[in-house]
Image 1 (cartoon, helix red, strand yellow):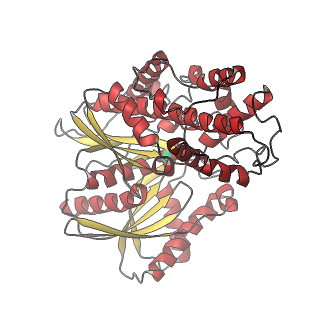
Image 2: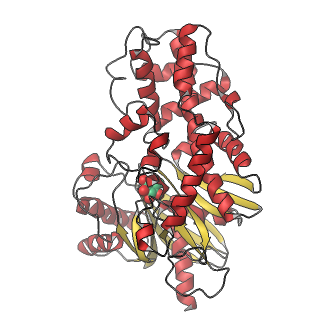
Image 3: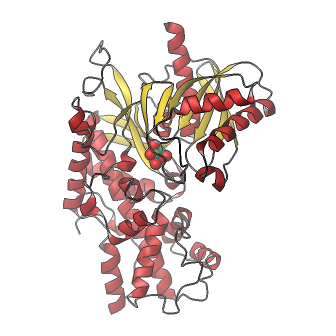
Length: 469
Ligand code: BGC
């Protein structure tokens, strides 16, 4: 395979020699995208994005990218002051934060109030009651008595018709409440807060975690135009000119006016436009996931799924008699048992040329006495290939955005556990992006806590704008 797409094949570890290993290599490598596939994915995404912004509803409906107007038309300008509450719901944790602006500098504190599995799968009233109770606890624990503006990061596809209104399109990731779809997340939270009473907040904004990360990124670096989540799920938002956003219905006062667009690229491909890219492992991951036949793009690489892709590939190699001659443990036979954090730590081994972390993972999965040295090499190799494929896919999608934005320098702010903990992902992505978007000098920065802090930032901007009007 050539590397004209910036794919760093040198990042792959060596496999032992021998006929079986040749077969392993060819089966595992077949997951990678060749140059034509990368180019095709890029042009499909570009066209889905364009269709998603079309004025014509019949065209919009054919796109798998929602391209939602977030109503965030400005980011921080440095004049924000005061205290803001922020909520972060959508990934593995639920968090409440206090963001304090003093002379343009932001400080924040946060606490986690995790949801139980029953709450994630039960009526959504249970989720919103938990949020309201947690806000109450936070205010008490932090001794906050004055009324505060609140920004609510709700990391699910929503349709918005105002900054403080977000109607849920569908639950994703680990959330599978039987109801809530078609309802406004702000209203559901307000109702839960009213039931408890005594909670002094004004919900001024509801936003996606990518928009929050974009706002947090612009605080760190004023060239930030893209916010991205590479975590349990995946998505991106970027600053778009209103003149390009054909479906924009409000006035356009100047050609420079922008709005943050939530692409909702997690669902990219749900209309079949990426079927040609899916491997048998991707199809199986989808069939056993919480939300079958949807969220095609994020299932190709995001934190909730990447480990399962590796596990399925390894089981396939075993079925063909190529590895694990002693069989696999009951634990390893369980779906979803092999996680993104396993992939990340095994990739640390790949960087160091050791098997230290892998040995720990094997012990955890009761596999320590069932694998040979060459089996270990294959596990490490498979993690490296699946990670490299993730970098190809995410990198190509990022390049589409950069080429569309078409500026000499753009910073991409990224939040999420996959990006934060994967030891090679940043460098692999940089390789792909610099080749596929050669005219933009791109920086990828970690916007730690961007999804939570960003909710406070957007609440601060909303409050500033309210005062100006
Ligand atoms: C959701 C997005 C979210 C992303 C990252 C996806 O499953 O649809 O709204 O931004 O996960 O959390």
